[in-house]
Amino acid sequence: MTHAAAFPAPVVLWSGSEEERAGKPLLLLLHGYGANEQDLFSLADMLPAEFAVASLRAPLVSGPGFTWFPLTASIDYALDAVKDSAAYVQDWIDSVKGNHPSVTLLGFSMGMAMATTLLRLRPADYAAVVGLSGFVVDGGGDPSFRDAELDRTLPMFWGRDQQDPVIPADKIEFTMAWVRQHVKLTKVLYTGMWHGINQQEIGHVSEFLTHEVLNKR
Image (cartoon, rainbow, N blue to C red; front, side, top):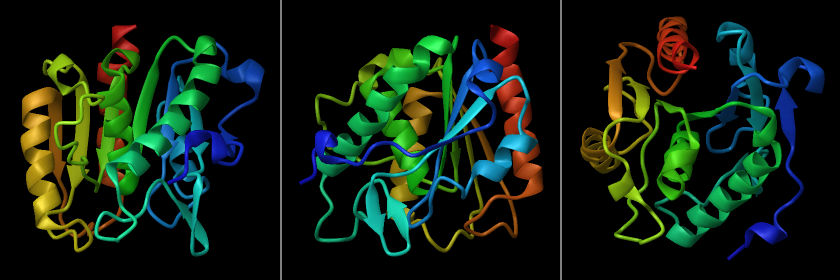
């Protein structure tokens, strides 16, 4: 098992210079399995300009890209691996959040699993969560997941295609039960998007971020 201290130094892409982003709400992008920090970065230009956008690279090498933790179906998967990676991300967030009035998480696929894990470990730390074509990990009653503190007031957007061929049905079932119980959910289904992101969805995400984060400052 890799502990956060053994992970590489964080690699981050920012949407602006330090001066430009100071004082803006932070939107952190978390990519999917086998991708890298450039994968979602093009979204920064399509989302509200009031945010400072950061895209963070996952700490584990996976083929030509990177991953937050081993795939859940693999022999190397363990909840501790998810928590170690979340600690790595949280340490980075802690190092920059003093410059921002709030932190919102946006994760695609496995990045959604990471975003919701961060929320569950520190429920009071985040303004909102956006999950795209992803899932929530089964915490199995682990006490470090503070789900009981999430009382359906934190805004979460979850967009997906019912024909998504990548995320297994059991993960969707668990995620559906979890979001209904713990967050203030905006759920949108898209047709013909498969395991991806489309223009319509990004438009909806922008509206959600404006309404739930920017208008509540």
